[in-house]
Length: 156
Image (tube, rainbow, N blue to C red; front, top):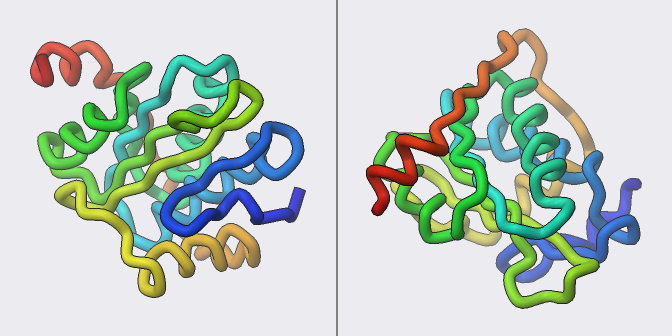
């Protein structure tokens, strides 16, 4: 799927199988890690049926770009924001479609210190990378760490 209409004004939302799927999510995860030259990325997901698989795809993408992934498991978006700052991550991805219908999913992305992406310097670059798939080579594959338990305990 090459349709990137899942990129909206400030976030990523799409109808599953129509304009968002695991391949697109992989490419976005990889683009996020590459754009920020990320050493570490926090990834969380909501309770939607497709969210765990989408989070796995985003993790694969980030790790293929050389980032280590701190998987916080099922968590609210605010927990992902907190974990990015708490763990000193370079970026964070929450797989969620927020208030959209059940046949939708998407992603919220922040950069270090849980700062929002700016449109031209971050969001559009990530979209362009996900579309072009012009990946940098030579990075070692990153590792994934399950931080769900310690993240939840510290957050609460």
